[in-house]
Length: 185
Image 1 (cartoon, rainbow, N blue to C red):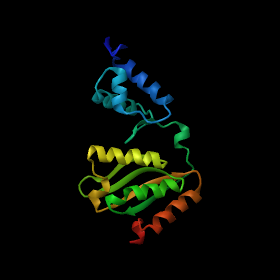
Image 2 (image 1 turned 30 degrees about the vertical axis):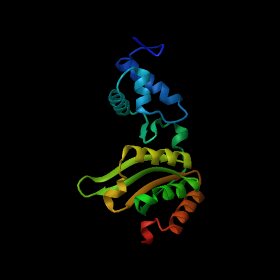
Image 3 (image 1 turned 135 degrees about the horizontal axis):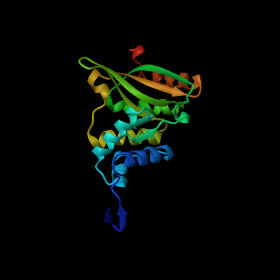
């Protein structure tokens, strides 16, 4: 144990740490960043990444998003309707694209591109409102990361989900009206 700013931090070890991480994830109301877990556990962020990998290997439904880690409880996954849509746009249109989708009441679950060497690459996005879109986009900006769609000249797929098929229809119509659907190109 060591003291930092008057707070005693105990370095959690191995299985005890993973169980604590799982407990925190299951009760969290928003994503938790790996660096926040690391501070709480008194270990490095890389140790947390390894812990999350081990927990996922045990079939724990943990999702790594740009906002942090999420435990995918039944309520998080029970959106009755899903569709995959083919999109195309420039990086400067990413905010408008994502706003169009979430404003229609859908969750943007992921993005997929077809890479010439690696094949299909899919990354979780998990944004459901403008605030989450803004957090995602600020993370892209602050890290200097590129969008996956930049590997494919803007062509990509999104898996979108909603409680109603009408929300999916509205999202697709909004995308069509802005020229973001690859099918319309």
